[in-house]
Image (cartoon, rainbow, N blue to C red; front, side, top):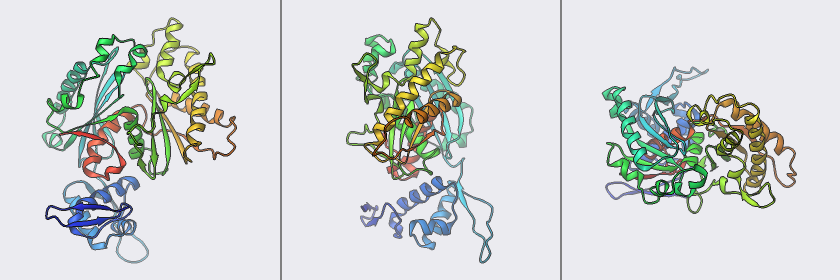
Length: 408
C-alpha cells in the first residue's frame, strides 16, 4: 500500500512503506525511514541504507549528512573491505534527542529521562496505595523539576516531549486495588494528558501501559530479531501487545493485546480471566493471606523480601497460566515468538519464562507450531521506557511502529 504525502507547496509524492522515495519533497519521510532502519540494525553504512530502501546513493548521502549535522547520527570507525573506499557505519547519537517517560502504575509511578538510544539517564520513583490524578500531576511537576535541575541547559533544549503510560479505565479496578470508589472515579473524567500539558513546556503523549511496554521491547529489545511476536507484561495485572511485521498492531479499537481479559476457567470450575491467574496482585493476595507484608514487591520490585516458598508457588501458577494463554494466542496468529516480561527482578522473569516453556511443552499443540518463548530484554522499566519512546517515534521514526495520542 502506498502513502501519499503533501509538501508545503502542494506537490505530492508516492511513498512505499517498504522502501523510500527519491523526491526531495518527501525528505521528512525518508529521514524517518533512515532513522528507523539505523535503530533496528544498530549501525548502517550509506551503501547498506541505499540497498535496503531503494533510494539513490546521492539521496542517502544528502539525508545522512543532514541527520549528522542535526546531531541525530554519528560516525563510526571506517570499515575497510578488499576493494574501494572504506565504508563508514552510522549509528544513532545518544545525545541527539532526550525524552521524558512517565509510568503510572496501580501501586507506584516512575518518571525517567531517556536518551535517543533508550538508555535511562535519570529516574524518580514514588510508591502509593493507589494513584489519583492530582497526586500524579504533583509527582510529575516535582519529578520534572528535579530532573531538569540535574541536567545542562543544552540537554533541556533537546527534550522532545513527555510520554505517559497508564492502565486505561483505572476506575474499573476499585476492588482489586483496595481503593475508595470516589478516589478511583476521579479517573473517569480526568484528562491526564491535558492536565500535564498545562503544567509542562513539552508536548505530551498518552498510551496504555502494556502497549507502551510492548513498544519498548519492539524498539530496544527483541524487535530486530522477531518480525511477529506476542508480548506479555506482568505488572499489578497482566497485559500485553501484538507485533506484526516489525510494527505494533493496534486492532480495531486500539486494544489488541489485552491478554489480561482472556477468558479462563476458574479454580472452582466457573469462569474468570487471565488476570486472576497471572498478576503481581495475585502474589500480593497470597502474601496477605499468609500474614506477610507485601510492600517490598511494590517499593523495591527488583529486590523482594524473603517470603519463603510463596513466590515459588506464585511463579508455578503464573507460568502454567501463561502456557495456556500462549497456546490460545498462537491458535489465532502464527506468532514466531512470545516474549514475557514484568515489573520485577530478572531472576523472577527467568523462572516464570522457564515454567511457561515447560508447561507449554506438556499441552496438546496439534495444529499449532510452538513459538519461541523468550524473556523480555527491557525489564521492569519497560513501561516507562515505552512511554519515553512515544515522543521520539512521533517525531523521528516511522509512525507505524508506535501508537500514540498527542496533546499539543
